[in-house]
Length: 164
Image (spheres, rainbow, N blue to C red):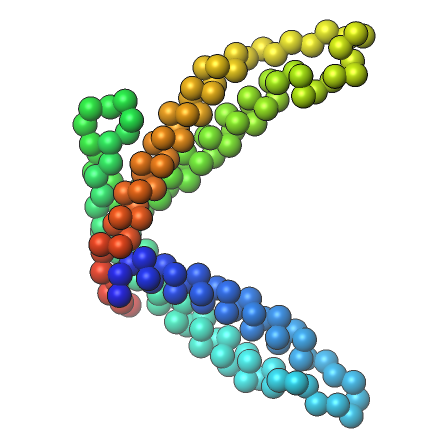
């Protein structure tokens, strides 16, 4: 199995746990004289089994991610960096946060979207310039796309092996 398939399995396990949780909650109380549609004890056993499998799966994925190396060139830099998958995932998360912050800053600086009914009464001005911020967003977005491609590529190349 490829690492990408293991990641999909992790997602499936999470959805399955959510589903089992809802089913357990729906069947713990019944009207006197009625029987539950499903046995909460059996559902709980299944829930516990999937939790055990998920712990092994996630632990193995994390150990693999600490070993897998990817090469990635940040846009605008000549040389590639070698990152572990764990580092690449952290870098991707930070790029997403930076993009979100810059986008909200640009949105906040657009005066035509805010205070339109105050224009004649109170004067407002943006204290940041939008074009340089937009350029930063574009560069960060390009880096994010490039890094995400490398991560996905590694996920489909790397074999998943249970490590625990």
